[in-house]
Amino acid sequence: MGRLAIAALQGLGSADSPGRVAACGGVFQAGKLLLTPMEAEIKRHAAGQEVTLPDFPPVVGAVFLGLQVLGIEINEAAAALRLEIEKGGF
Image (cartoon, rainbow, N blue to C red; front, side, top):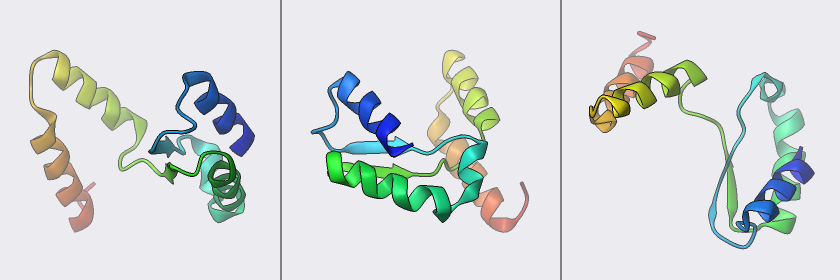
């Protein structure tokens, strides 16, 4: 997985820039078993990149995109949703 991320970063011309690689999808439910070697590979070839997990499931991202299309500011919605998740309401 790390090599795939490196190939994508190189293709985008971003391997030498600071940034984030988002580990999205069900395969990452394997946790550190997959994330640790992937992160090490990325750091070896693109030291400025940070591997992150998404804050929300993909469906929430779709809702946020829809809100943006409607001209609704999503920063407040995201903050409110994070608060609900922390309280255990999601």
